[in-house]
Amino acid sequence: MKKLVSISVFLLLALSWKASGQIITSKEEAVEKGLYSYSEVPGSLDITSGGSGSQSSETEEKSKKKRKRRSKKNESVNIPATEPVSVTKTEIKLDENDYGFVSDFTIDNYTQIQIVNNAMDFEGVRYRTGGTTKDGMDCSGLVFTTFKIFDISLPRSSYEQAKVGEEIKISEVKPGDLLFFKTNRRKKAINHVGLVISVENGEVQFIHSTLSLGVTISSMSEEYYTKSFAQANRILN
Image 1 (cartoon, rainbow, N blue to C red):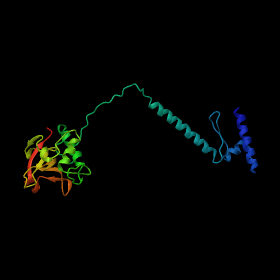
Image 2 (image 1 turned 90 degrees about the horizontal axis):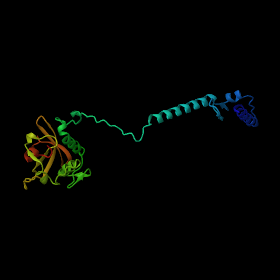
Image 3 (image 1 turned 30 degrees about the horizontal axis):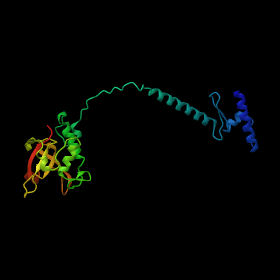
Image 4 (image 1 turned 60 degrees about the horizontal axis):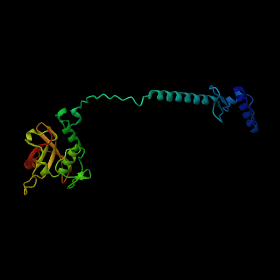
């Protein structure tokens, strides 16, 4: 049967080429001219209009490899839907150097450090009175939004925020603590707040939002903040 099909195809090709002024006298000649190729796969014939027989063989070989890859892929993902997946929890040890500005990272102050990291994401945001987003925020808005990320609700104003948590000495502050200031000499009331981000060699750095610079980082070593400092509070123990 395979021979009959092969002969039939050969005759059709011969007639076609005869009509165009060319005569094919053998199957070998047709293969040589790139007009016919016989695949080793039983029952399959490959008739081409151009190119070489070797190219057709390469194509068939590629097809075989693809089928093998698909077969292996299907075998590798044969997981019963009802079988539960077991996940082993592993402890991840973080390097304090990843935070740069944090010098005393421990597992006990993980939340405080994450609060600091989130506050740092707002650095460069412009100042906006009453603002609490990256479109603009004021000092208490920065603190309010940062703690809110961790579902910690604080009052909206710096004056009210100063009433929350435990008041501590400036020498005791750590990353995540709040610093409050009285920058209005006339009112002499707390009207500004910053979040401590690092304590290095006695220097306290904090992030806050100012009218002129927006969300920025300052130091308690600056005379302006040393003179206007009112108190420090620890929200999280």
